[in-house]
Amino acid sequence: MEVRNCKNCGRLFNYIGGTYRNLCPVCIDALEDKFQEVKKYVEDNPRCSMNEITEAMDVSPRQIEKWVREERLCFADDSPIGIACESCGKMIKSGRFCDACKNAMANQMNNLYNAVHHTTDAERIRSKGNKMHFLDKE
Image (cartoon, rainbow, N blue to C red; front, side, top):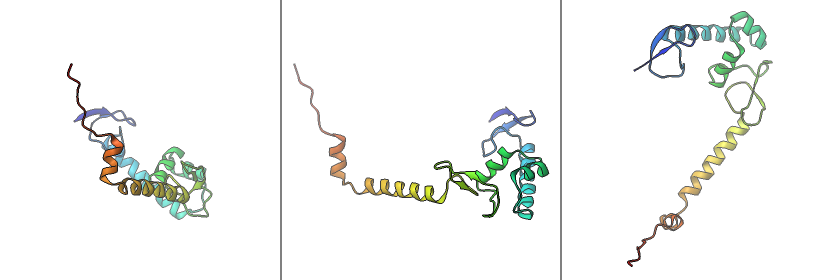
């Protein structure tokens, strides 16, 4: 196991990996409690702004954006809060990509998958140039 200092409080802890990198178990629990409070606040106040959430709940806009990107926190369609799609920049309410970009990526992956699986074994061998080579004896 690896011993690290907590990024938040400075305590030493045994790092075992996970989504909360460089945080001790105490700080992880505190952050989870804060998430539940923010989630409840957003559910009770669906049209609140980012500034209202950060001031009322004492949490940074960066942390809220992280929870939205992880799809743990989602805003209503009529909410003024939105984050930019990482691909095209369109405003979205949850996740990393808008629906159009998700569909485009899925189609690209499907096309790649189909292209790989439609080539025959003989075509693959010829394309790689797998042939027997001999050394000249001199």
